[in-house]
Length: 148
Image 1 (cartoon, helix red, strand yellow):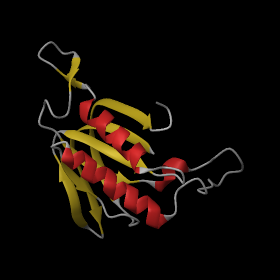
Image 2 (cartoon, rainbow, N blue to C red):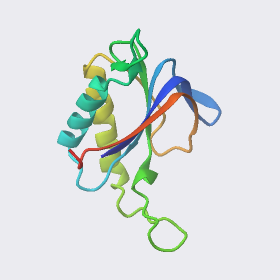
Image 3 (cartoon, helix red, strand yellow):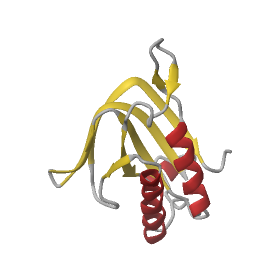
Image 4 (cartoon, one colour):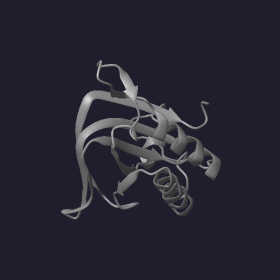
């Protein structure tokens, strides 16, 4: 699994003009699933993300986790994270998991984040979404469960 994490002051996702998820301070997670991902990959990333210390403490040091600051998560499925642009001009998405399996693991991942006491808002899997992100910092990290 791959996750692009962006620290956010406020973010939301709309589908067909309707807000499906909205957060204040926290993380926007763009989540991609590939063929050989398992629940173990989702567990690893949920644990890593819930404990990442990327919020400033009283001294301005990135020392606090999302739980420490009472932050929220906006999780958005993003199959294009597995786009391959090495050949030609049009990306290939054959490394992205089949939709049924990707959705199952995406939902499992979100439940794992919730089980750690985090509020999780989402888009709609497979829908055309408009995502608005007010980056904080900006702080952007790429996490890959295969690179542990």
